[in-house]
Image (cartoon, rainbow, N blue to C red):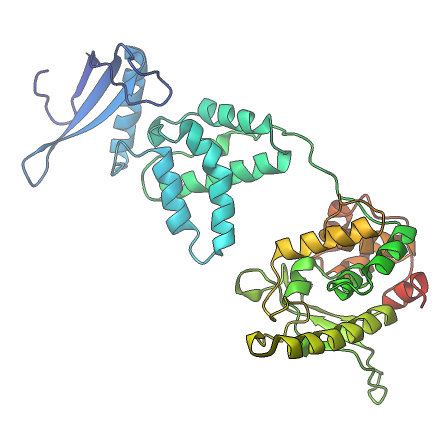
Length: 392
């Protein structure tokens, strides 16, 4: 191939059989190549930007786009930069400050994408590539998983775009397809709730079930709750009198923050929850004495036998045992205690605005959209309603 002048093109057919493209089979008979000469570097070596394609016209189109990039000063630092590299860089750099759990979640979401098209050169990635891999995920996963995967992919490419590895974000041009229907959330009826509370008595997480069901506390908030934020006594001397209450100010999320600003709330406790927490406190004191030196004093309301924080898996397994003992089966999750709280409140006539305030939602719109199946026509309020539903 003759030496080319500055910004002159070269187009040729490569018979080597190595097309370096994950979308082509090994032993590919060849591929069209294109190159633009950009002069020489400080070391005297010639600088060239290369493109490739299945046809000569495809290479011409890519060279035209490359010239357009050069005109506006856009020069990708690595012409062989792949989608897999873009994802790896985003996971290590673009999620700075996020929890290890968030990073792991995004890595797992994007793994099927990397397995399918990770070796594709990022500049050569097309909307068709993105749409095809998302369709494959949608064939077996829920719509929520597809949307989360698409969002993660779009953010990873945006990170590469900000670092001049690619000029446009093709993932942003693709609408995620509908996936498989997920398991709809459920809520307990009043009768089922009574049965569940009876089965929870005496369990290590009995008070946990009572608190989440009767006060609408999120499971992530209950796991982070400390005794410093629980007051089981009435202050009749105050004006107005202060009832037993729990301050929901923390969660097990990164940095201990609650889900939203309005999730930081102080809730009056129904009498049944007060009684359950008193009994739980006594049992925990006995457990602390039995543990002796291995006890770790974190001040947690709900903890392991050694005083350490509960993992989400611990809660799920114990909760399934309780629902099974109640005759409700094992197809229930701890978060559905909160769903049931909303349903029971709505059935008892509490307005959606008040339910939103008790549940710590940023607005009643969230309550209406997320818990629409559980809401009923409404009119009253709070902990006293639960006292009526679950009269001692």
